[in-house]
Image (cartoon, rainbow, N blue to C red; front, top):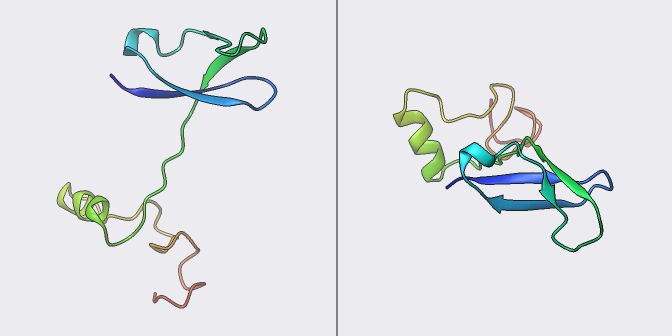
Length: 83
């Protein structure tokens, strides 16, 4: 089952393993404080040079998350790591 990220209006975030059919259903507050958590888009960080970069290249991609970004996560050329 996939892991989904949920947030409350106060900014508190939680992650849950749920069936895809339940992904967008609201989640009751696990701490019992009366908050309701709704699903948010999760962000993924990818570092250069590791297995993830190889998998991206093998799948026909360049292995880069964004063409303007270096593998270190900074804008291309700002880290001194090349073009």
